[in-house]
Image (cartoon, rainbow, N blue to C red):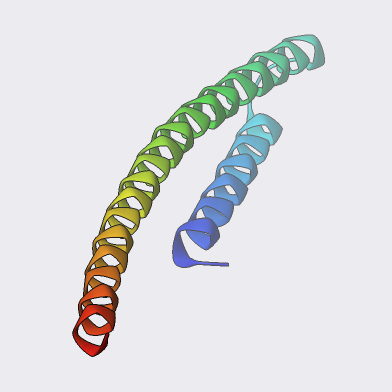
Length: 100
């Protein structure tokens, strides 16, 4: 686990702990507290979903860039390999013609 993942897990844990403590000491009755918990959970879930979707979009863009770069490199390698093959072919023919 890298530093960013550890930080994210710690932040979420601290957030949930803070919410729980706040709700326990809040001067509201049970019905109001449950309603508040429901709204907070929905907000947290929506926020997590938004971040997840944004991350997926960013990963998709990155994957497309990597794919394009890979295909470009493959194309360059093919061109260079073809050039080398042509050069070798010319030298072999030249050598065969000189020895014949």
